[in-house]
Structure formats: structure tokens, C-alpha cells
Amino acid sequence: MFDATPLSSDCARLYPEVSHACVGVSPFNGYFTADRLVRLAAWTAEHFEHFHFFIPDEVTAYTLEALGYPPARARQKAHRQSCHLHNKIGAALSALGVPDPGSRILGMARLRELPGYRRLAREVEHRFETDLEFRSACYGASTWVLQDKAGALPDEGRIRLAVRYFLAELPLFAGSGLITGHPRSMFVYHQRVPFLQQFFDRQLGFRPEPGQGFLVVREAALEVSGR
Image (cartoon, rainbow, N blue to C red; front, side, top):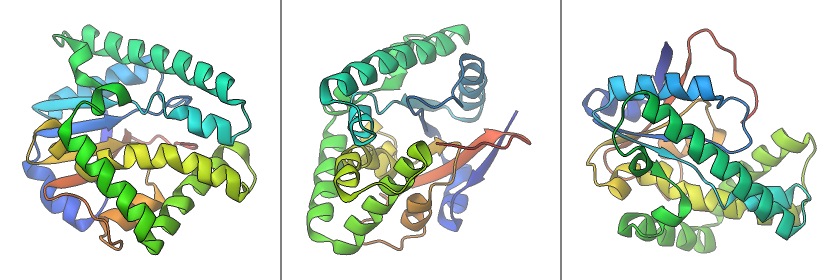
């Protein structure tokens, strides 16, 4: 149904013993259809004893503002799409008979209640302020996203706005296991993101938590474009 590829050699060594997965689902991404979410949820439940789905819901407004939406319209649009996505994931989990599906979905409001997320978010912000190489890599990640969506190189102001989205989701890449209370965890996404290749190859000063990996999971023989 799906092919799973660890992002780095460290992730490959970790993968066989991981019992938890955190599946990233991006708002405004046509890849995440209702049917595919059902299949992805089924695959995840089959391969991992424990799992969550992560939606960077409200912070999507930063990306929309960077793409030119007025702030109020960006927040409204992000909220509407995020509610739709929460409902689609909930329906996919319910279709599989998963009890209390809402408890498996991590949005930003819930994450801010978790000590592990708050700790990692502080570390991310500190690194961003004090580590020039890390800050440059974060800006590069946001530039990649905006170019993918807008088709043109964004200016500095737009990149500085869009990076707030990336900094909010980075703690999940660094420690989805720490955040959810599992000693080993894989963050699951369908694309190889250039920043995360660097990150999981441990080329940056800020590094994944012990026991944290990343898994590229995509439907077999399916070519995916866009984020």
C-alpha cells in the first residue's frame, strides 16, 4: 500500500524498534484526500502500536500572509481549512474503528499544553536567535515552501513571516516521541524536505532528540509533487 523509507542511516537503525509514529498532514495540500487519509491511517495503525496525526493548523496563517493574504483573511482561511482537515482525519480514524479519534490528533492548541512541546519550542527559538547557521537553514526551508506555492523567489519580509510556521512545527520533527511520551518515534511525511535531510544527518547545531527518526511514507509507485 505504502513504501516507507527512513530519511537517514540513523533513522534506518532506529526504525525496526519504533512503536510510535507522528503523521504530518499539511493544510492546503491536495495530496491528503479523504480516501488517502483512510489508507494512510490504516497503514499507520498496522505498522505502529501507537500513533498521532499532526496538523499545523492555526500557524498556517503565517504562510498565507507571506503569500499575500491580509492577516484577518489569512486567519479565517487557515481556521476553515484546519477544521476541515481535523474532520477528515477524525473520519478516517473512525472508519477504522479507532476509539476516541480526537485524542490522536495534535493541533497547535493541544501541543502548547504539553511540556515536551513547550520545552522544544523554547530550544528552537533560542537556536534561531543565537545560531546563524541554523537560522539560515530555517529561512531556506521557508523559502523552499513559498517558492513551491508561489513559483517565484519571495522577498525577505515574506520569508521572515513564513518562518514562524516552520519554527512552530519543528519541535515535532525534533521530538514527536518526547512530546507524546514515547521513547522512540518516527515523524512520517510523504516528501523529503531538504532542511530535514540536513537535520537528520546531524549537520546542524540543533539536532533530533535521542530515539527520534523521520520516515518518508508514500504510496507505492506514486510520484508526488508539491508540499
